[in-house]
Amino acid sequence: MSVTSAFVLFAVIWFLTFLIVIPFKIKTQGDMGVVLKGTQAGAPEVHDLRKKAIITTGVSLILWLLITILIVSEIVTIEDIDLFGRMVEVNKQS
Image 1: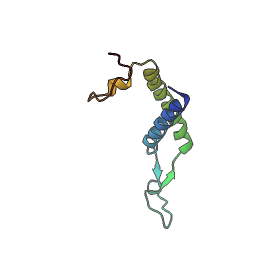
Image 2 (image 1 turned 135 degrees about the vertical axis):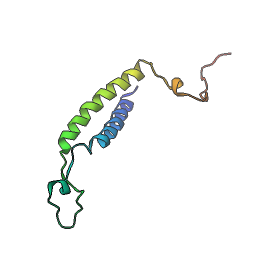
Image 3 (image 1 turned 90 degrees about the vertical axis):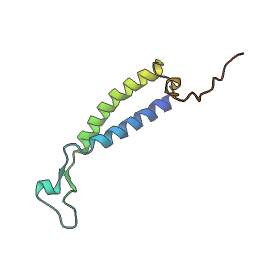
Image 4 (image 1 turned 180 degrees about the horizontal axis):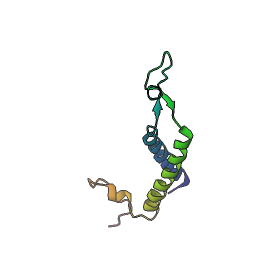
């Protein structure tokens, strides 16, 4: 796995994890009882994005390490994912 592939894998895992973590423990304006004029009651009042980004980074790092180990050690290869047998062997000698 190249450095670029590893970085892209980490970025994808980080953003997917972040989108999952964002709604946790959010407090809306309706929950706080202070709805500003022109906003919806569901608008966030307290969101703690810095804390969520730190949590996301930790979880993503663990997931990235596990997936990277699976890929680099070739426990899981692209041939394992080829469910329909469409991959052709390039170096096949007859």
